[in-house]
Length: 220
Ligand code: E4P
Figure 1 (cartoon, rainbow, N blue to C red):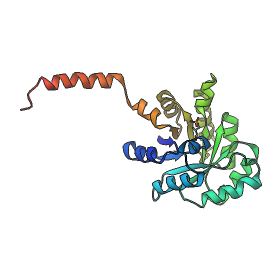
Figure 2: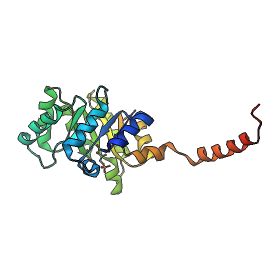
Figure 3: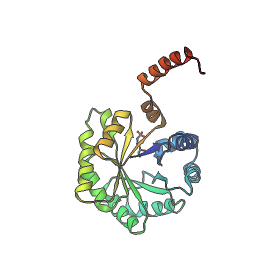
Figure 4: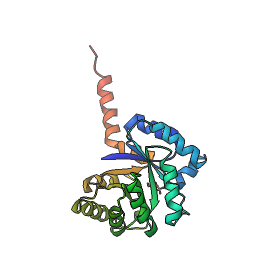
């Protein structure tokens, strides 16, 4: 399973690549705004971080763009900036024709803001390279998401779609493990979610105990 960092903080991304081999980056308008930099500046900085690697960076088209005529040229413009870029398009009906047109030009699309298996199915039919079901947003509203991810993986496998499934808006280690068990290809989460998941109180307790034994034992 691949781990992507959901962030537009260049230092944070550089740290996660170095410290635990992050495989790719996803951004969205919220992350870009939080970076404190203009959109074009920050996406170019992230592109230079991953230059020459197979790591993808998902970059979102202006969410105000909702027509084929608006989305297509902007997607092409962003894709031309870096071969690492995968263009994020929101899961609305006009996007499906754009996804298909971009796929024919070998421009990869991450179909984002997916909340149902039906949306996922159509995005896969259109030729999306990635689809991003947002589990955290659904769970924040008390909705179950394990079955959603399982259904999407089953549908993808039933029809041999080449689309990779990014379980997105991941908030905790349990959602990461559930996604791995379901057979999702990728999860994307913030740095703190990974760091909290790598820790366990028993590990810290064990280190403390072993340190005591170590200190009570001569080295030679
Ligand atoms: C995924 O690609 C999205 O950027 C992300 O997971 C959205 O969720 P968040 O911004 O609420 O974390």
